[in-house]
Length: 243
Image 1 (cartoon, rainbow, N blue to C red):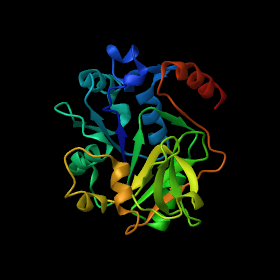
Image 2: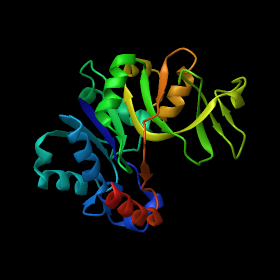
Image 3: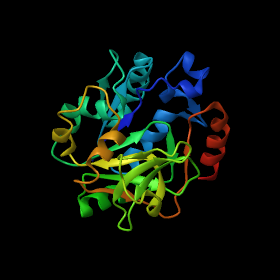
């Protein structure tokens, strides 16, 4: 299994910590975020990892080298020239990711108890364009799913915005929050060909919701924390101690 860790972001919500280091290297407990994710991926059977880099990229490269690549193959997708958002970042890494098999994408700031191997196996069984890890979580932005857990749209409860525009009966669908972890079919790359250099993977999915199968994956007994703000660091340390 190959995986991509999305680590190129500026980490603005974690300022002032990210004024001097990348979000990926913010310490949580006994290790930085990046190490927590890498070790979880390795434990799930991942043999090759791609990390996209932009903000203080040399620090990330040096950290991985000092860890002897954690004993696996680790490559870097360089976005130093410009941030490409999640969709553009995935497409840029095509040469490193595309071996004809599904691959996993994991945000660097997500810590969870997800059984990653089970997620990947589920994707292989159902064979959708993408499998998105979702959960019932308090937020104001939700993905919308039908009774078969097929992605139908997205809504912002604060603004009332719905995507795709014109989606009927949006209030009838299940509202679930995306957890920043997903498995993608390599078929996405050809479908991305006409998109601009920089684009959101979620906008890409929503544009295809009517024509492609995109499934939500709701893990049992799921627990996660989004380490996005300084005040969540103590929560993350407590979470790690419990799990």
